[in-house]
Length: 81
Image (cartoon, rainbow, N blue to C red; front, side, top):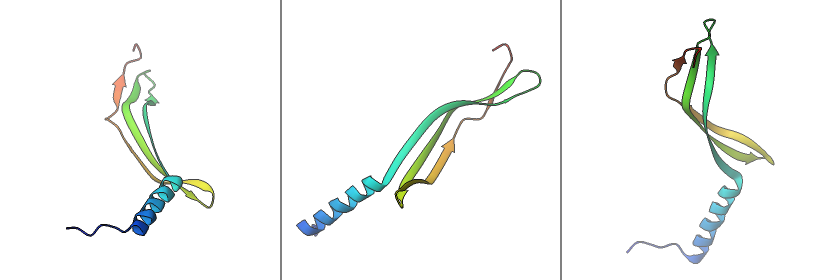
């Protein structure tokens, strides 16, 4: 039978979880963006891009401590599009 945490250990674990919730925020964003418009009028577009952030509360200020983004390769649209 596994060793289960005592009630005081459970309270400490719950406190640490609450502390983490109060000091960390995870965010995400989905977006499409225009990279460039060429002299011909064509545009390079990125569709289905995404970004994620982890913020941490440091000295009463929110700081980004992790950032990641990814997307599909850009596509070129004609100026008539």
